[in-house]
Length: 459
Image (cartoon, rainbow, N blue to C red; front, side, top):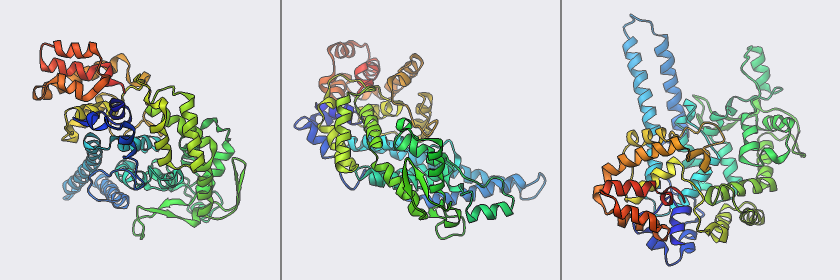
């Protein structure tokens, strides 16, 4: 159970971690659940609003650079300013991801961090959009980490109103068709102004009730209308780059969504829909199923899902209570390691194995990109896949083997692979793997065998 606590609920055992969990494996995990939320990676202290203004300044420099003509005296100056701004923003994104990875590699509370990473994937925002890329670090720090052991409603509202989500899903530009802002846009013949349904659709499909809930396109459209006005402060406004409700962009009128009636109440209308979605039984069932799949098995035991769902409903979506129910569920402690590590989990667990941390984003990012999980770049709002079929394909395993051999060449000579195997896997270390490691011709070969073994790659 101590080995399961560190490898399934956590992010892989650091030296001495399994030994520390032996006395009370469940208690070891329960002690990591705390109301104040998750740990925060070491960062530069910049808020989403600050980052937003920096990105806007960069975009202005880009436009200025493009408008310069060859032969003008200051064309080189403008180009250099643009390149410097581009580099600075890229470095900020890399530093955010590295800080998160370093926290994951070093934390003694790895269950708390894994729980947080689950929610970061559930509420995906991706660097596939340039403006959003610089906001992902602040999004996790501001909207997710403080709320991961609070009420789901708080987490849903915080994520749905954060600048990262509003830019990623184009909500900041959404305007009610009959709003004052739409009338103004019509006079200026702004063809781009109009209703955007992206955020409403993804909240329904991905963040709450799910596609099987029976909602219609009309529900999506009405929800999108309820969310109009959820926007960001612009340059020269007091709340530049921060959440701002724009009354003039809100679609007037009452709405009916999923059979519930919502009166005309401005910002309160959208918040009321979010509150009802958070409390919906279908949301509880869907997300509890995702939690069970993430922690236990691609096809989790129905009894586990039902237990989590029951606790969710009994507590009104108290995520600390749901996490406690997960730890206390006997199905979660099945000795069979059914989950296959994603590239991020795999690399983190390897650093944890040797008690080290990734030292530079220039080393970490190419590794994850080559393994199929480019930093902060989930391919869609669905987030990263978590099933074995996605990550255990032959080509993916060959790439892992190549990386394992390279990593072994760099670190294997520093420690005894036999001792590392016992420290990393505890009672999960099988006799065939232990024998293969002991009989390896070199430490490098032994280390590579360890981190490529089924026991290490599965949790």
